Length: 120
Image (cartoon, rainbow, N blue to C red; front, side, top):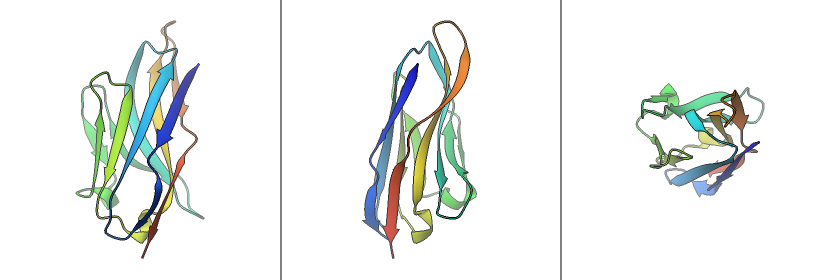
């Protein structure tokens, strides 16, 4: 079993910054891509940003230039630095990881989510 634990959400004024963290632990052989997704009230979950084990990143158009995704050296923790936050960034943010376990089985894992609220 693998656990993804997110932290760093909260309430911030428009134009402010937050940094989300997500740490993966458990039955891990390797982690492929990691990413952040979000679900705003009344909307479907959408991709925010992803990063591969090789460091290749991908961003939603709506966050390009404002958000930065990164991983630690061990590759088990992913961060999302969010600058220039807007009211429309308000959502529950979910961490995602594609994990190969010690039996070499691959599975997609999700964190429980962390609330980000941006006041205008």
